[in-house]
Image (cartoon, rainbow, N blue to C red; front, side, top):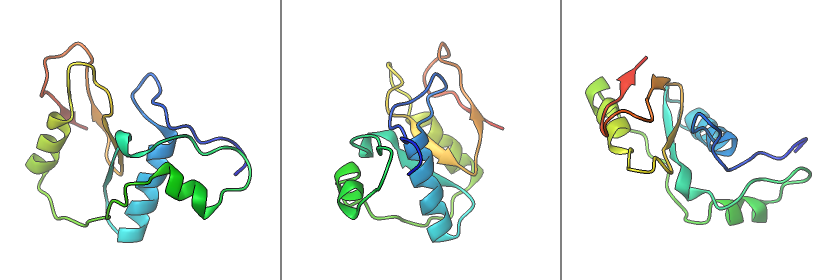
Length: 112
């Protein structure tokens, strides 16, 4: 690994590590969109050689990757349900962009 891939979210609420995991799941499943919950990762991947043990330590829960057919309304609902008072652990997505406002009322998302 040429550089560390961070677990923490940036100012836009995005996690480089979660994006990498979501992209690998999207590719493995052959789907257009993938979602990863920020809370399933335990730490950043450090620069240098990455071992299988590092990967199991990082994502220890053994979550299964699932493939679903969803409507736009179902995707919108999933995005809306992620918001809490503190906006922590939001869904990380690949293949999909959307806008959100930190000061908006809860349960309000608009797909781009």
